[in-house]
Length: 167
Ligand code: ADP
Image (cartoon, rainbow, N blue to C red):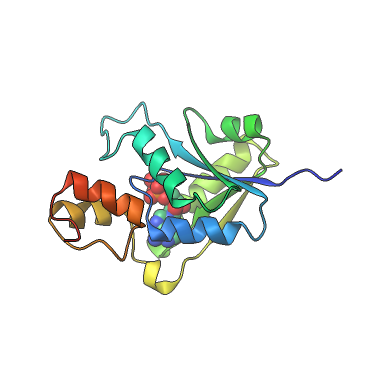
């Protein structure tokens, strides 16, 4: 019997961008099921733009065509969550050198905490390599057009939040 290969793609996803989406869709080449896991950061004072429930809802809306992608949230250690879900793979995106140091540290720490958990790094297309949720939030809040950076369900929410985002 073969076991489905579950991968976890953790992050803030505030909100999910086309860069995230690209990484998640690429991961379907080697994972049978991808759990996009929105981190609850109880220790962080900053609340973020969208609630965790809204972020999960947007991820589900972006992947309505793809039953192998699920969305949920997690609190506490990622390694504990991965163990509970029977996942042995963590997917992260690497955009630029600036991502490297943090990602390297995290991957080594997670391996230290759980030896059979592997972190896989994927790079997006160059046109997505400058993209981040924080940039999308900033441009949208200032009335800029974010249509190239987010999927329609996300654009809809940003428009509701900021009357002028993307026309
Ligand atoms: P965090 O809040 O932990 O920095 P994010 O929610 O921004 O994480 O992103 C989750 C994962 O998606 C991270 O591995 C991040 O590097 C990756 N990611 C974010 N934006 C992009 C992008 N434009 N292209 C590729 N990967 C990305």
